[in-house]
Image (tube, rainbow, N blue to C red; front, side, top):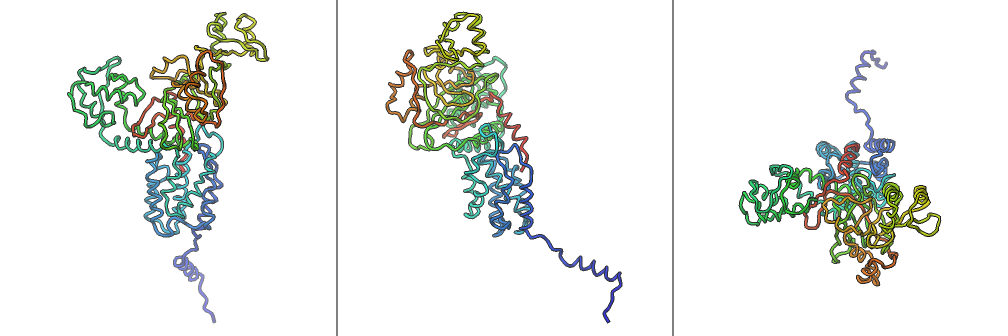
Length: 544
């Protein structure tokens, strides 16, 4: 007869079994599949330049959602964590990728730890995408996902790097191809090292005070140390007196001033002392923001490229991807005023040149500036070599009366300036059609290039060396010799439009810190307050 257990004993046995028999647990693949599905269903993050919601599913699906990082031991995961910890070398923040947390979790993680595996995968995918296209939306890509991630898919890049057992390669492939990026990285490492040293602080000067070469200066020894630290004065230079602002120090200060957007006169003044006292951590941050902005730029194919850095008031014309050629053409430029007419950021394509061009006055300038002058001066058009052109056709006129003024205000006339020595566009216009009607051109106001601050235009870019730039962009047209270009730019020569065989990319970008092959960093004032705007955008960005 079977033994029957009392209800009390049966309950006790059940409790004992519950304590001694393991509860069935979901397999790691099920956990990963669930986490990937959750990521796909999450709301998109509008501030990011990419949509990462399907990344986990696309990464794990080909391997049946099994863990990847610890399947052959900890080496692969350790290499990934080390790459994330070194994100600061790229101007990125290791904390954005939970590098310290992942390092701690790795010590206790097991091969079937789905949560750790997914966290490390997500961090690596975000790191590669951020390195490739930046962390926030740029002015170059304002709608939808950045199209460059179609050519550089972080999921495929990470999968390939794991297959090749070389995660470093994935990081290197994600870096922007522009040579300037590597120069900035080197400068960033150097300034990070400098920022760890004790600060050197000079006593600020009163407004209007100045120290000229040969003057007594009690802090000459501190100034010398700071200039040597920053690379503007060689360490092998003679020490000189500790209380005199020597010619040698003045020459080094002049180099420092040229690198920091100051009047390079070698005079030690309030602004120069202020720049010398700027915390090096601030310079580090400027370099980091430049790396972020360089990640916004497209990959330029081999050939000529024209780049303008707005706050530096500088233009470079380079032969991208060409080695052993002539050095880049560099010149000063004038850009849009910070207060009213800031030059926008964009990537355009130069399509033609126009020698001795007409200046077709934009309607905003006509309404805001010229029509009031015409109303008070009936000879304004004659004095400025301008004319009214009927919009519906007809002969231009320089006659100003009540009727023509009314017609001009109504839009029946447009205003243009004839070619000539006082033409606002100078002798040549470099056209790159764009919605903002921004282009490069020469100018008759040559004296403005001597100014330190050169945000003086209505938005277009005035170039210092128009003849040299014309020679650069017409390099594939042998008939356009230096003599032919000079003749076409001579006042009185008929206007002539020359189409380019191949369009030339023109990028207008914004960076308050850049660096060259020599590693010397060049810093510029934040004239448009765009550094502050980028800081705000990065602060608003949600963590991964």
